[in-house]
Image (cartoon, rainbow, N blue to C red; front, side, top):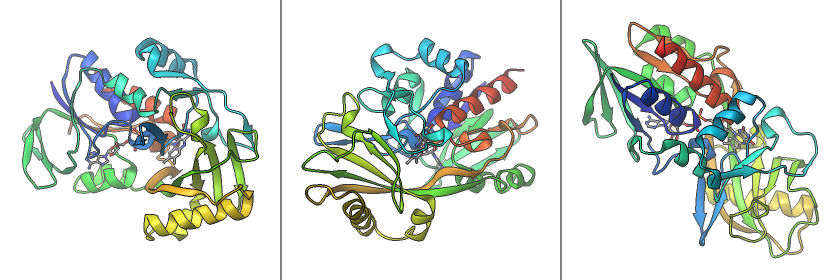
Amino acid sequence: MRAAVIGAGMAGVTMARQLVAQGNAVTLFDKSKGTGGRMSSRSWQGGWIDHGAPYFAARSDEFAGYLQRHLAPEVWRSWQAQISGTPNQDELADYIGIPRNSSITRSLLGAINFQPSTRIAGLEREGNSWLLFNDGESLLGRWDLVVITAPAPQTYVLVRDFHEIAEQVKKAQMEPCWVAAVQLSEPLNETAEVMIDPVAGLRRIVANSAKPGRNNKNVYLLQATADWSQGHLEETPEMVGAKLCELLLQGLCPATPPQLLFAHRWRYAFTKTPLGKGFLWSQGLQLGICGDWCIGRTVEDAWASAMALAEQISN
Ligand SMILES: Cc1cc2nc3c(=O)[nH]c(=O)nc-3n(C[C@H](O)[C@H](O)[C@H](O)COP(=O)(O)OP(=O)(O)OC[C@H]3O[C@@H](n4cnc5c(N)ncnc54)[C@H](O)[C@@H]3O)c2cc1C
């Protein structure tokens, strides 16, 4: 079968691999330039800054075993960060990518046919085929099977004409997160590499430079709380970056003011209300939907959702 997978985050690359292993001819699309989705990284002055998930955990032996079997050893390693404060389940640290977190999805992608910088703007059903259209409304081709792994609100836009499925997608809710990467002249006066709730408005500070391979010094990632992010949602990255620097300055008193490298808005960063089932699948339409938001809000949830849907498709 010809299968199209939309989204090249953890769920999308996992799904693409499983479909290839089942004997399908797979094309993987992403609107971004590379893989990773919400576990992406940015290059910065010859080094790397992880501006999505800074690290992730494997709670199940299945996920840890999958990574061990399928990842090249040089693209990941364990990172048992020292954490101050009380982390939630989705803030526990086991692993990072090397030299950046998006190395993980890049390695899992392997030789799969990947079409980056391609936003899927529409899906049409014609007979037993799916027609996919890009932003310019050009037809990209025909597929027998489509799997969407975009965050719930972006998935909804693609399936809104398929009412039964669309109604279910609508039940999941997601919340935003502003992040800012900053550089300090001296390290923070804190031994922890991850600080939870360090200052009002900031949920987490992660010492990006403390992770091996990042090739930068005293670079920190500031992650705003969901409420703060919602309150500043439509401001410019420059305005938000300056405000997050101010929070750091007032709360943790670094030796000199932080230098803002960039700020990034994740409009659909975390699951607020999950769908409550592992995936959505329509046998009649040959349409599948998976991603972290089906069951939770972590990298492992994205993987588990994709694995469960792949198994359903193979039956
Ligand atoms: C700031 C931040 C910190 C986080 N911290 C942690 C953490 O510490 N631990 C943890 O486990 N998790 C963390 N997470 C959550 C984790 O990143 C996600 O759970 C996981 O990466 C989701 O993977 P996914 O494949 O389901 O979705 P995504 O990674 O969002 O992948 C979906 C992909 O679909 C693409 N896409 C969307 N619409 C279209 C379209 N129309 N056409 C083509 N492509 C499209 C997107 O570009 C994206 O690449 C964090 C997230 C953020 C934002």
